[in-house]
Amino acid sequence: MIKVTRLNDTDLVINADLIEFVEAIPDTIISLTTGKKIMVKESIDEIIDRVAQFKRKSGVRVKSPDTSTATEGS
Image (spheres, rainbow, N blue to C red):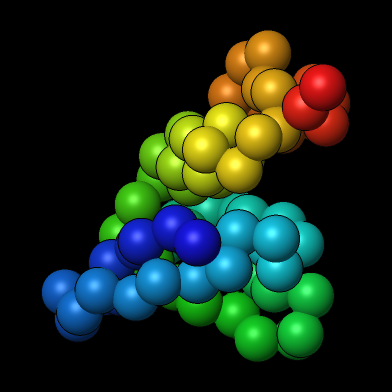
């Protein structure tokens, strides 16, 4: 789970495993595998860092903030 901030300054916790993609147009929009879209204040890089940090805590080794280089833990 990662914590993000909606545009109205309310906190929201989302399941990082449900993130399908993140885009900035210009606000950051997180699209979930459920079809829901969430507009947040955090940048794409901040979202990547939070997901990587969550994955590390979950036992998934992440070589860089780029989630495409993640591998499952030993």
